Amino acid sequence: MYPVCIRRAMALSVAALTATAMATQSYADANGVPGEKFDLSNWKITLPQDADGDEKVDSVSVADIQDFSHPDFFYLDEAGDLVFTAGNKAMTTPNSSNTRSELRQMLRGSNTDIGTHDPGNNFALQANPNGQIFGSRLSATLKVNHVAKRAGHPEKYPAYSMVVGQIHADKNKEQMAEGRGFGYGNEPLKIYFKKWPEHDKGSVFWNYERNLEKDDPDRTDISYVVWGKGWDDSADPGDSGIELGEEFSYEVTVQGNVMSLRFESPGHETREFSVNLADNVDPLGNVDEKDNPMGYAEDFMYFKAGAYNQCSTKDADGIWYAACPGTGDWTVDKANGDYASASFSRLLLSDPTQE
Image 1 (cartoon, helix red, strand yellow):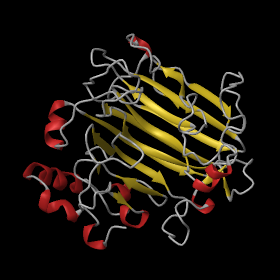
Image 2: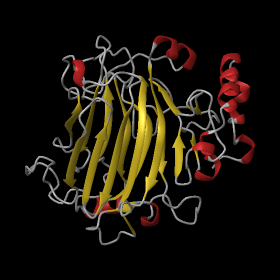
Image 3: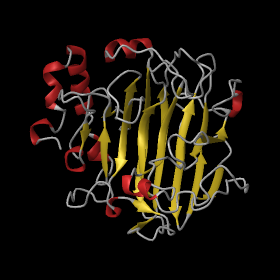
Image 4: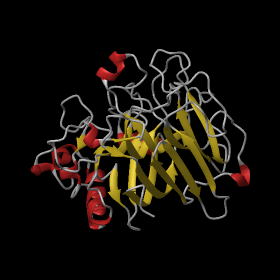
């Protein structure tokens, strides 16, 4: 947890900030801090940096985020929108090669007597016999400001993309040891925006990850198009796509065992999807024989939202490593377009039973 001395404007990094960054901090604080406009009472944030030098990615607790902003990665702009930004190269979480400025749902609020991985801090499906909180809803309205412009492996699906919302299953070693197909920490939902540099418009789609152990060759993402093209299609989306700076909304409701998705944007067809997360039937009604037959039935889950940059700088085999350029110097990477950014005008957690 961050001490009080670094709350608001992240004083721990002031000594290291350049004159430009300090000016940005002043500008951001002039517009207030995110917690003054957005309800952050059930969110903590992970930032793409290690400002305190402990060789771990920085995070800000529910208690401290209420009056916190960061001049580059988490702040209110002049319109009062909440801006999240993450460069291609920066400190990452242990299990990812992708940087993020991303909120993590904390149903416990500031009550740290409840553990991060406890059932009281994560929602579950009705099928989960150990669940304490069943279902949740996340509503967001946003615009993507920028996605990475360069990739060493542009043919790899995550190139030029970012995730702006997701449901993450909790990683649980005890569940994994039971061998019943839960606790792997997979993602039943990732909402993407992707735009190729030569295109005027990008695409919005969502992915479902089969709930299988990490080394299972069938553990992969299945993609569903909302507007534009899928993540594996390099064709120009044309009028069916979404521009940078163009507003769209998503609402994700998990109630009972069902995840319902609704996507809206002015001038575009509203798209809705529904999938039972406690079996292996996909949103199109087809049985996926390669998926866990019980889906995510006994996992514990939480929402995430913000800028999860998918343009990894790692150059390796596998679809996830697009070898996107980055120096780790934010000023340089921003100038080169090697980053991802989104602005949210609405971000709301609620009870799924409420209308």
